Length: 170
Image (cartoon, rainbow, N blue to C red; front, side):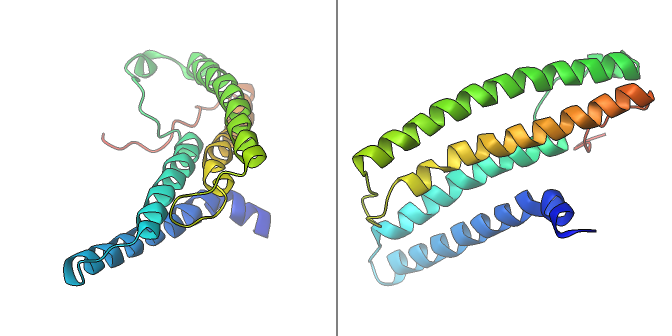
């Protein structure tokens, strides 16, 4: 397996792990500082907040990849492979167009922040780094949706059942 295949397979997982660990460690340090020393920092709150934002957007892309978004799939149980694939493709198309529009507008927000040089209150670094969570998330979603289209079209062409993701409950 090549490096690119490993990155494609595990990128969101590793990014989620990094941001989650950063969030938990920073929050633990801040709780200890607040309870033991009666002191807290503004930077700790910002690190936790922005880590959580990155977690949400990267997690959304990971959910697109694994078809793990919440959906009502009662009808899917009664459909054959071909209509099921067409329905998944339709849903992915709708999500794709929403993601493209959202990517455009989120980049506009980043551009405005870059233009005016806004910085965070505690860390005093450019807000662009944190506002980029939204376009990064939508760009990852678009990439995963394109991969989903290819996978679904192959399933449709070959007449095999479409990938439905892992079930949370059976």
